[in-house]
Image (tube, rainbow, N blue to C red; front, side):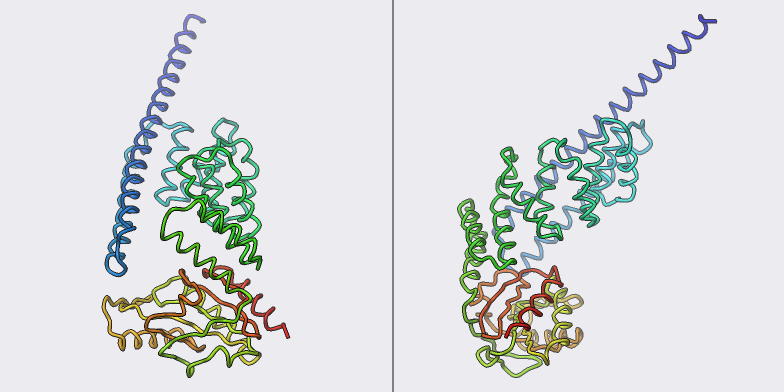
Length: 408
């Protein structure tokens, strides 16, 4: 009897070994193809980045964005083809984990998450890596608390590689919690073993900390962070932005510079000196700016609620010689055409607070505005008390307005 069993066991072991070797080889081949694909499109993206520095505003910029869009579409198609090529081949946990990574890249998040959830519960050496992929999925799907809690659990055991520090950066720049953004900004800067490719991000992380300090109305702390950012930076454009941040900090607790504009909608021309006694919020915006379009309804709600109780909101923009919003796009327009399009846009969005339109936008320079939307908060004494860049955190806007209105 034993003489019959041993050949069968030997055959099963041999087949199992062959299957494992086949699955391992498939995993190696797929990993190699994946790495080559990522390297290729990373190289092409860097070439576009270099070209971006020399382009002119307008049509050249549109062409560059179109090139980025095509590149991302090509990368997604190449990775999708790689997945399809390996579909149905010999399977293993290692191969499945790699497939989940590629599915994340191509946007198949549900499929990827099923694999990751299974592997993260398994008692294997891949569980840790699967949990790391779960952190990434949570970040992509904006489940920030889940991402933070899971990352804190596995952080001490993770390899300190580029992906690890990329997650630090994701928390530093995108967490909805200010304390978390500050925590991971500081942890990134304090890390002694940052990959060389990530060292240039130190400048932006210091600038991020400066922005957080500015939001907390701690101008001196913000200035210290900006000095560190400027000391590390050699890029002229970024240096100009950092210097503009410095100028904004210098404007805090100073009388608000006058607004210069040739055209006003929803109001006769307004003089900030005559608005003392009211809280004023100036919104620097443009119709083509998506975040600007997000913040305008927030400001409109605040205006409707508080306009009779001491709040004045003013939208400030300038002419660009071209026009686009969420429905209309025109390459070349005259001054009259651009003003008519802006007026029509304000009507469609039922924007009723005053809007100032300048030919040259000199007040952008007066308030050191280099990014839109930028909100400037002015207290009842006509003094600049706060700058806020970006459309996020409508609660912060509302709370600040209420606190300024409450001041005597």
